[in-house]
Image (cartoon, rainbow, N blue to C red; front, side, top):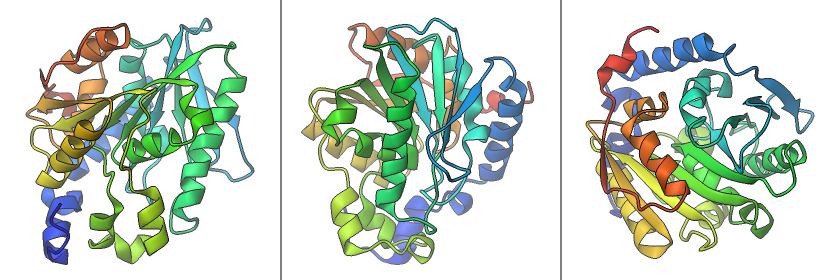
Length: 283
């Protein structure tokens, strides 16, 4: 990773609102699709703390399968809402008939350790709502991918996770601190050291998903982690940092089918076809 590059370089790698001409359209797509599917899964909210953002929601089949998919949204640790990512939940029911969606507090009002703690506390609360022995499959996007892997650095959490699907993850916090995000996050040296993801527990199988059109930083970070741990890198054809989420919208997408087979023992392909901009159309 080219740490000595300028802020302009890292902004050019990470500032999606400027990099992607359709960034706003994808945010609107996520919100509108999430509103359309909110009533489909009979989602029930459960609090795991006293803050209004410390909640999770659980829905789908009342008889959970052996694996429960759990979505952790992105937003560079300081933005976005779980409500606006419900659009991925119907697709994730292919991995398990009951699905969960996690919310957490945001920086800079709290620190990175608090955000990671929220995800872990949400998982602990979720486990109390599920039958004993149920395993989780954490599915995180962007900062949510980082938080999913940060959560399983705790052995107590890792023991309950069958898998992590880390989509478009920002795993190395040093480049983040050299970008526009530092003005909002004010990452400390200790936070960068403590919460950069360097390894993946071998007990948790991990898929590192990257859009073909992601910037180099995301490809490099996924490749580096794949080389170090029990992880497979999968490239989604034609997808960028936001449109890659479209590959989770539907149960029959190439990515979801590959992940479903992977959870029961198949190998992951190195490349799957993306869903394309047709997913921007209203449903």
